[in-house]
Length: 215
Image 1 (spheres, rainbow, N blue to C red):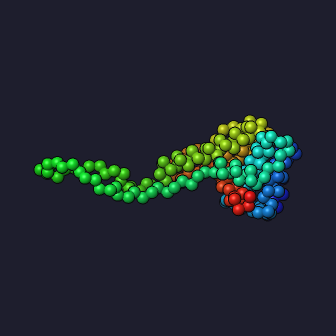
Image 2 (image 1 turned 180 degrees about the horizontal axis):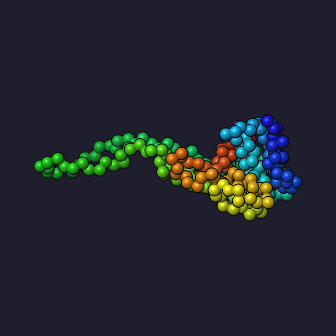
Image 3 (image 1 turned 45 degrees about the vertical axis):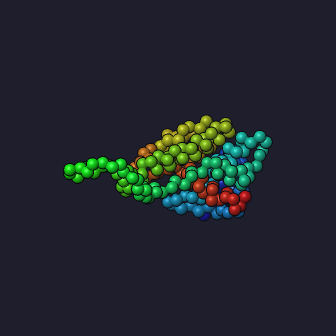
């Protein structure tokens, strides 16, 4: 299990300039809460937290008005607040509509065919398509927000896409962007449910780490 300092150097990927400075600043900010970085096989929360925080720290430092600006936890908390995916409420159970007086009509000679009922509460197989679309839009706002920050910092940031070995860049910041922003499956409505980029996990972990309790 590496220390936060050791893992930050891994994220720097050999860089000795501004990106390394961002990863080291990330280590300073995360050391009080994450002195050691767990490396699980299935859910890499700690690694993704460090990677995402480093990208945000780098973008904020490079776009600050003061040269050599030291990003603070308060700035990170503000950025996360602006870019976190809002909770998607569960599909509400439909309650019966209040009864309304019906206009008088002559009694039919035979029973009338049943009329369509408003909003029949049929259970959906899996997540409702509308909710998946809403989540996908919110995630894309996250990706666009970080991409805009990195572009303002001077990087040529490609659009996120399907993960591929062909997405290689000599820029370690863009390599890290691909790792976090690309997805394994382009189809967001597969039976397995929404498959979002690791960036979502990273920003959620940042929200837990740099919340109001520690700023």
